[in-house]
Length: 301
Image (cartoon, rainbow, N blue to C red; front, side, top):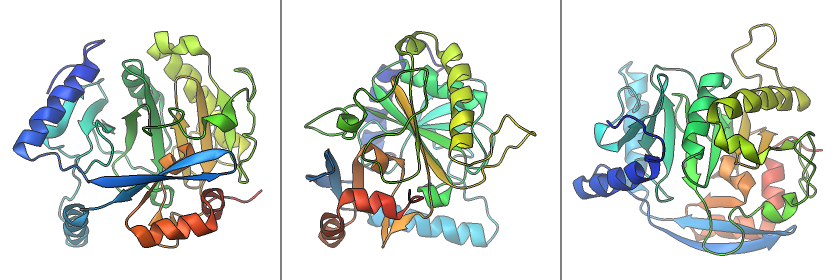
């Protein structure tokens, strides 16, 4: 394990990736991709292949859980995938079955449930990582928000998300939306959500950024009718939700369900990046339209 040093995280990610690919610890999932334009967004759709090993690992984990055995892949994490010792409370680990290159998981050292609300320590670990390179942070708040593991973990993917177009596909909708002193809505989003621009200078002070964005997060939860973690000592979320964090803005969306049909959707879907397992699922999204797909798994306005 490498102790986190300012300015070295990206090099550690690249070095760990190369090593984990050589020894087979990292198992990239091959993909093809296409775009579907809808509601002013050029949605980026990845078509996955080669998921057999991930599916088998998931089945083995479910069997272990039913038998009472420890099935948590993060306790302890696979050492060949550990990138850095981020803080006293968090580690940075590569996503073993990665669809996107250099996909980082920011996990708690001690077990915490994915349904618990985010804390100052969580935001501090996220900002320490985001300060290192241009990236999108996200959190799937519970299984119905697309979380595949119950051990608390934030996620970070490098930008751009797609090989063409804006770094984050939904950016055409959020240009000139509000200022950094106001909570607002994204024009064109037909579902309950809260959006907040951030002060650009936050990236220069991760500890200050953590405190400020924790406060913003709590207010966003309250704005959409969820429990505010700063009140009454509440630690568990009142409903599933997705959270996206960039250097420039935050977006929170309550969820009503995980799937559109048999297509699982996580936070990246709300950034305009969706994943399907085959051409049949792709055609479902194409015919129903991506924005309607997002609306189907959220709270309707």
